[in-house]
Each structure stands twice: as structure tokens, then as C-alpha cells.
Amino acid sequence: MTAERIDGKAVAAQIKSELKVRVDALRERGVVPGLGTVLVGADPGSQIYVGGKHKDCAEVGIASIRVDLPEDTTQDELDAAIAELNANPACTGYIVQLPLPRHLDEHRALAMIDPDKDADGLAPASLGKLVLNEPGPLPCTPRGIVELLRRHEVDLDGAEVCIVGRGTTVGRPLSLLLTRRSENSTVIQCHTGTKDLFSHTATADIVVAAVGRPGFLTADMVKPGAVVVDVGVSRVDGKPVGDVAADVWEVASMVTPNPGGVGPMTRAMLLSNVVDRAEELAGQA
Ligand SMILES: Nc1nc(=O)c2c([nH]1)NC[C@@H]1CN(c3ccc(C(=O)N[C@@H](CCC(=O)O)C(=O)O)cc3)C=[N+]21
Image 1 (cartoon, helix red, strand yellow):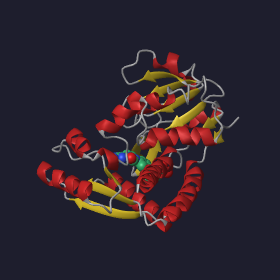
Image 2 (cartoon, protein in one colour):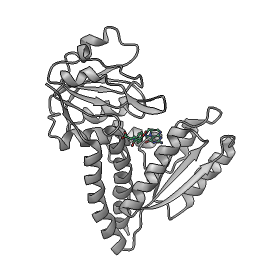
Image 3 (cartoon, protein in one colour):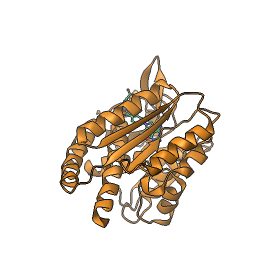
Image 4 (cartoon, protein in one colour):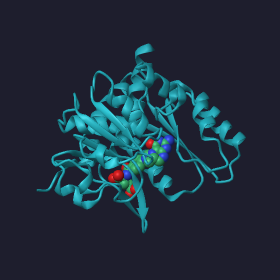
């Protein structure tokens, strides 16, 4: 048996075409959503991601504002770039690409983002809203995972989901999303410090691997027929490699490939957050 491939690229393309219709409608009302990105330094992975985000914007009709700063940018200079996007009316939402170079304070940067312009859902106010179950932008990768599973009719209600990873961009917020009443999953949050990890992954209906170690999740850790979501990305010889080993495809019922799974969905959800917010603004106008 080989698992069904959950094609994130195809779903992301579908979502982008849906967003384009909404962006065209906004444009007729005189509202043009604009996504800003702040990228510090020359990390090759980040360059690719940010480039991809601007390409997506062009496809959907969202204006984009790209702020690229050198590796040796000071905290004051970064603060100034963020303040400028907060003040720029053409920018309706933006992200600060992570990770920042080590001499810069990531938390400070995220905390400076105007909560009304947080396109990533990673600013402290947005994460607080998620905890409190109040409306707000949702972190893109968790939102993308839920959307991808929904569009493949994976039953989340009552499902046991084992998340391996506790980071603030994926593992932790995904756990919050899946335990909302609207998703109603039961989450087992594991991490690199979990004892006997196998005993948790092997009982789950859905396993999410968000660790960042190539081939970390192997077939013996997965219940036959489970759905497996591959989130972590590492670069091996310059090529992206996921957390899920090839033999998992022999026991799972469905697997998200990596690349081609969660990554494109993350990008599509960033655009969704921007369009959601622009529609809110248009409604208020
Ligand atoms: N503030 C911030 N927000 C982010 O959303 C954010 C971030 N920082 N820092 C880095 C991570 C990583 N991330 C990815 C987005 C798309 C792909 C993606 O589209 N990947 C393609 C492959 C592209 C490749 O070749 O690497 C795929 O999976 O098919 C991957 C990873 C967003 N991140």
C-alpha cells in the first residue's frame, strides 16, 4: 500500500484563485491590499521564501513592498523599518522574516508590529487572541495545515493528533487551533524532550512532524492508516528535505509531501490573512 499524496501545491493554487476573485472585488471598491516583507541578511532559504511571497502577491493582485536590510543592520535600524511599515497606508499587512540575525531581538521586532497589520499571526497580541479564542490573524503554517486537511476531508472532530514540535510558529499554535471547538481534535503535544515518543506517535490518527530533522519520523512510529503531515524542512546538499522518512508512505493512508505540501499552504495563508484584513478594513470604510 502506498499512501495518498496530499498535494499542497494544488490546494494552494486553488486558494490563490479564490483570493484573486476577492482581491478583484476589493479593487473595485478602491481597496488595494499591500503585503510588506522585512528581510534582514542574506540567508539563502529566507531569500527563496521571501521571493516566493512576492511572486504569489503578483499572481493574486496584491501590491507588495519589499524591505531588504543588510546582515549588519542595528536594532534601531530594524525598529525604524518596522515603524515605517506601521505608518505606511499602502501596507495593509506585513511580516518580519524569521529567523533574524542573532544580534537582533526577535521578540522585540514581533512586538513592534502594529497588531492590525500582523500578516503572520505571530505578534504577541495575535498569539494572545488565539489563546483567548478571539478573532485575529492566525499563524500561517498551522492555518495552512488545518485548511489542507479540511480540503482533503480528513476528519478532525474527535481525532487524536500527535504534534511533534513545540515551537511558537508551528507546534504550539497548531495545538491551540486544533483544540478549538470548531476543530475539536484531541492533541498530544510532544517534543524533543518527550520520553518514549513512539508510544505517543503510534496511537495517533494524525501525526504532525515539525522537528526539523531529516527523516525523523519513521514507519515504525506511525499507526497503519494514519494521516501524516510533514512540516519540518532541512537542507541536505542544498535540497529541501522533510521530517518524514520514505518508508512512512508504506503505512500511512495519506501523507503531505515535503516539498510540495505544507510550504505552499503557508504562503497561501499569508495571502489569506492579508485579504481577510483588507476586507475588514473595506467593511469599516
Ligand atoms: N516571519 C516568518 N513567517 C514565515 O512564514 C516564515 C518565516 N518567517 N521564516 C521561515 C519560515 C519557513 N517558511 C516557508 C514558507 C514556504 C515554503 C515553501 O513554499 N516551500 C516549498 C519549497 C521551496 C524550497 O525549495 O525550499 C515547498 O514546500 O514546496 C517553505 C517554508 C515560512 N516561514
